[in-house]
Image (cartoon, rainbow, N blue to C red):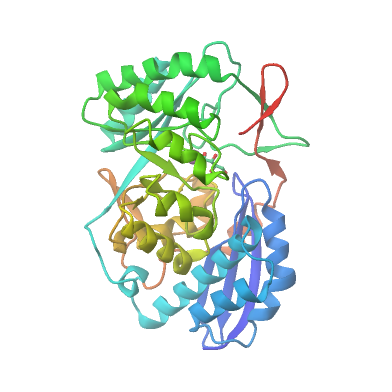
Length: 402
Ligand code: EZ4
Ligand code: CO
């Protein structure tokens, strides 16, 4: 099964996506998501300039060897650009192998460990009333878990609260990033009561909240303590995770479950967090963490340390990643939950797929491979447009984490 073609397809059906498509001499094709939100062309060029030429003539069936070849062979290890590129190759090769076997990918990963994949959606609102309305609409659609984000009184803009609620995921087209403002003091003053009101209205729902890397460990510890009685499913990214040891401070103060990892691409970036049981859910994804192959290693390490998976699944992860994630989620023993936000109709048109949502759960479908394709004619109608994630400043103008 020699690889005869490897191509990068960049498109923007509402937002930018980078997709790698690999073709074998037998005419089988496989695809992988290589999107890195706000920095898309860095990965596209890494792939097309350096990785695609290396794939030609190689055996598409040697997935693990290819991973090691691209990881060790580059010399420059890790990092989001290189790892996203490896993710795309690995995902595409698993797609090909499963198609060649005539099986949905999850069957090659050990088969089903559960009947469906528990998912959560985002309820974002400027006011608690708006959030309550959104949570209600999720519950009506069968959701068992919802992430809640609120506007902060006194601040003009807040992460997770946008104008287009259904398809909102930041990355705005324009010459410069949007500038948001932040005050930890105002946030900590309002958020426990806001989540408390959602908890009062929905006593049985799994509630999640994303702090988006904005606190210090001791601030996060305090917030975790104040949220304990609200029984969150998780508190996400309370602090930036580069300093993994910082989570010891949070952990020693609160039993609120912690989820981390959407920006962390390798097992080595997560080693202390998982190995010392400093987190409860690991949030890195097929798209970020070296594809199916490396994510399974991370999940195995996590399993050993009582950490469950909670893969990142915002809309900047393409339907190709979502399909791959669902095969992983269905098979992995220590699955926790999967983030899921529907893509726009334009995106679904470019990426026809067999996965489906029903009553709070998702299923990847039974098509051989990933069960997702790219319609290149449709993709061609949506050319790339540069877009940036926002930046974040404190009220006095100091740059802060976003
Ligand atoms: O900001 O996917 O939990 N989800 C998130 C997302 C991320 C974006 C970044 O590209 O934090 O909203
Ligand atoms: Co997040």
